[in-house]
Image (cartoon, rainbow, N blue to C red; front, side, top):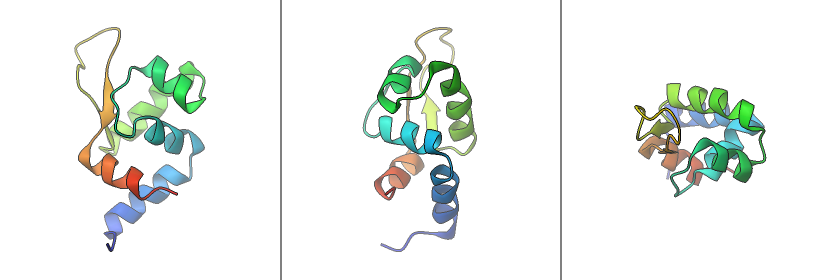
Length: 88
C-alpha cells in the first residue's frame, strides 16, 4: 500500500521524536491513562502530557473523556492507528 504524502509527513514527525514514537506504540490497540502510557513507553510522567498534546494537535491521538480532571483516557485516532502500523 502506497502511503500518502500527508501520512509520510506525519510518520517523519513521529519518528524524529523517540518520545512520540514510544507513546504511539504504547497506545497501539489500547486505551490508557497517562501514567500507564508513561510506564509502558518508559517516559517520565511529566513529559507525557506535552507529548500527548503534540500528538493530539496532529490528530494522531484523542482523549475520549476530556471533561475528566483525573484519569483521562487516550487512544489512537484512525489516522494514528494507520500510522503506528507503518512505524518501524
